[in-house]
Amino acid sequence: MFTKYVEEYEMGELWRSRGRTITETDIILFAGLSGDWHPLHTDQEFAKETMFQQRIAHGTLILSVATGLIQMDPNVVVAFYGIDHLRFTAPTFIGDTVHVEMEVTDVLSREDGKGVLTVRQQVKKQSGETVIVGTIRVLLNSRKEGAPL
Image (cartoon, rainbow, N blue to C red; front, top):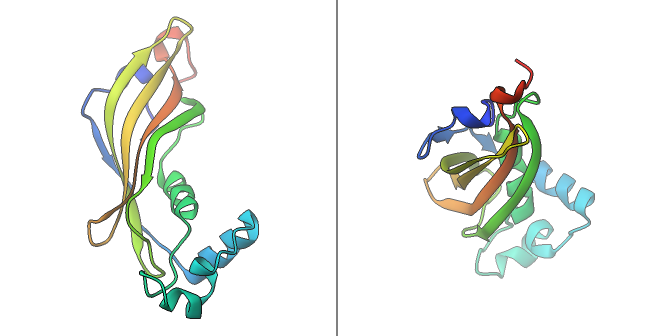
């Protein structure tokens, strides 16, 4: 998605990533990395007694996986600018396959040879259900100001 200079994007432009299946190993490694060993993620017997009836992936794990599914050209992307209105709308289970869908909602060119691209991001699983939604902002280079080719 973030492979073009800021002035090359159009309002309403759509992009979809490839998929990635979430594994038990993903959840355990993320728990170790983040320190979040909540039993809803890591204790099968505990999770059976919850509304989900099984372990769920950390929302922030799925957000991280989604970030890895997004194409980013290092000559174009200057910096991640932030996420607004982030919501975790449904659980992701072991064995679910997620992908990212994005729509350009704003393009702001700046005088310093850069611009801010705003996209509505949805992370969906194989059923089509949205599991994460938010507004992503990325600082991009502009070709007009002599950015690298």
